[in-house]
Length: 193
Image (cartoon, rainbow, N blue to C red; front, side, top):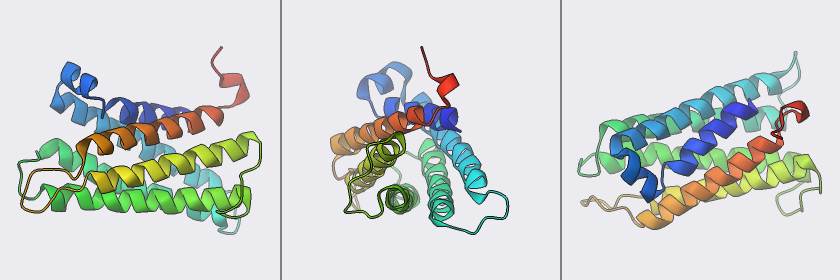
């Protein structure tokens, strides 16, 4: 699960970097985003299965995992649609941005629930533990993805995002937060040397 989250994070970290797009081209870049979203979905499904346990009640961990999985499905729709559309398409803002915004809201809710589970409240500081750091950096990633969705809004009647540079930067920052969180949940025996 951690490896899948890390690999998906790398895709979203590389994808918005202009030099990467120039190197691989827009179509390959879009494929990298699709791959990243699919990796996130598989990892989120594994996390939900883990949170489901053996007949355990549906606690905050389960709800956080379920909402996260839903968010990844919205991002699947976003990335697949973006692969088949261009900004010049008049339906871009309706077909791509809305699932992105809904995915970001789901991630914010999921990250908030996970943080509350670890810290005891959104306004409380996460404990100085591996679990606390994971919750904090993942919530940071969720907030950054939310800012990316806002900045990536395509203005109606145009093919212009509200702020492409901010959308790209906050996507990469969010992915970096998710990457750090996923590396921290690697089993100790699997940590890189």
